[in-house]
Length: 137
Image (cartoon, rainbow, N blue to C red):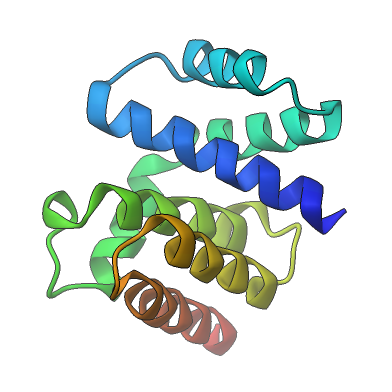
């Protein structure tokens, strides 16, 4: 199942990245990506859930990023890092269907694959702080 979820996260990340950079429609963009890759239904369902969740909760998610990365204006974050954080924060704080540590680990893996040299450490730091704060509540 982890392979399916990771593929869905990658697809969701690609979609969110495109939305961020080009402002395309989320449903159309995701559908195009799904058609291009011909992935199993489980991947498609989870990717749709992730993309819709991030899009619908973006203000709350971005506010969370701002509060845990105050030295980094959201608009100046690398697009990949910003969207990895959005995806993971949705999974940790909103969706809550996977353990937070799994969502953080998956985000760090995405950062290693798609981000810059410092991306994994940055993503882990922001998400670790957000997670630690939720544990206090």
